Length: 153
Image (cartoon, rainbow, N blue to C red; front, side):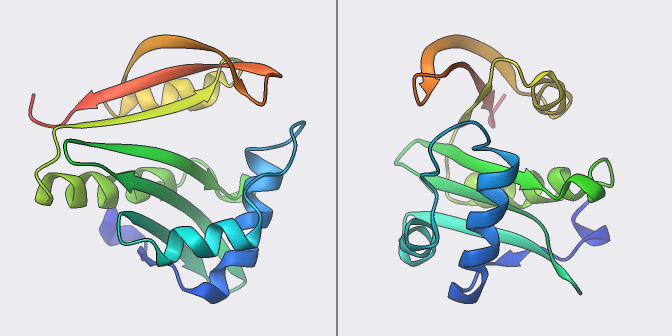
């Protein structure tokens, strides 16, 4: 999947577009927490990868993953609504999973909105399994579903 789409680490100049995409695609109906300053902090954080799929007219998608000693935590992933189902999300996840394996991590975990069945199906197709319901995960407004994938399995 990666070969079809350019995936690269984000630059500070990408922070505005990432924050806007997070607000519109992920944080709708919630208080906007992933503002440009927070995205820039993640870009600068050595324990976090912020990756983007650039397009000629902006970003096709982005992902933010924080790395711990034994597991990675996907904090955000979004694909432009007009570009979904073209492999961008899969390419972003493939890049992040490859990096996590190289770092020796055994598990990636993530959360998605309980009502976002498309995201749940997407992660399921990538081998992630629902492991818990997290009450009020999304600003106390909506429950989350926690997923995990064993990278060594």
